[in-house]
Length: 119
Figure 1 (cartoon, rainbow, N blue to C red):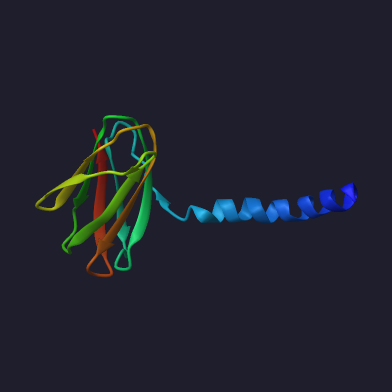
Figure 2: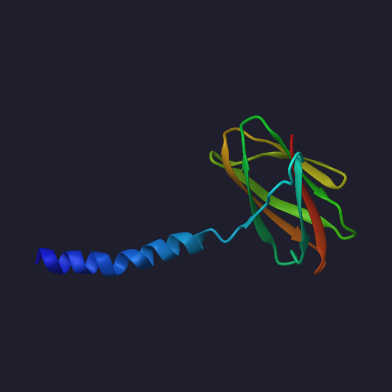
């Protein structure tokens, strides 16, 4: 009986690992050396989730650098959703804890340019 349970666990464990890896389908934002900003250009009309590793007390600014309009649906950190302040074509958030932060952004066309900066 123990062997049967062990074989079943070994058969299922690769599937569990695969599902965990597939669960985070966000796009990682990276900054160039000596830069505080990274960007994405492409289709976000149906919404796209981005992730960025940030430290506590950083100011995250999501800025529209394209010709269309963008909307930041949410920003979440390790403690949950963050409240943001919207200015003309930017939205600003202050981080609470270090860790991955996820941002869902929508554009109103099939071609958008978004910049993510952390100060």
